[in-house]
Image 1 (cartoon, rainbow, N blue to C red):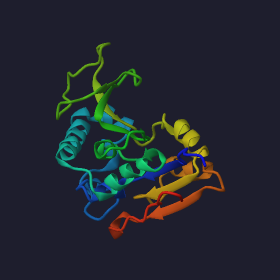
Image 2 (spheres, rainbow, N blue to C red):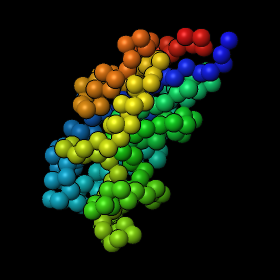
Image 3 (spheres, rainbow, N blue to C red):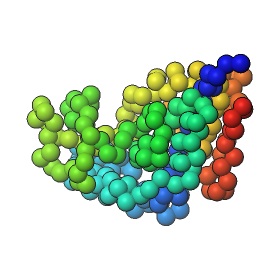
Length: 212
């Protein structure tokens, strides 16, 4: 009998991190109600008011530094004991990694990284709490949050589709699958793959067991 672990894809969204105190975009009282999306999360917003955009993401980064992985993050990480797990997440936090997940693909970027506004392939880990005007990349251009803004391409999408096409098991957790192109990942999962849809608000994580 083969000991080879089955390939499990976990596709996660903002609902996974809500229990850690990171508000979701569309929940009542969520952070997007305090800011107009068009003013903080688009390339046009960056050109119009860098200070406001940086203030918004600096606030979110501080929230993240104070947040901790919750039961959902930990349960997903523990699945690596039994499966070959790939996490593809719409979240820009690093709570999956801090919980112990070792293979995480961030579709929409990472809050604790920065990139050059001119050369998006120049990406850096960022340990400070705040990006400031005057923080420059090695080529002398302003650093911006390493996030995918509305209207920008999703560079990790092709990698995510490739991961999905090899999945034998598929879990969707914390997302309503209504944000495209990310939601299209389900179309690449093989038809014979076993699938689970999990509502993180239930506080019951009925994840697959060994031998599934």
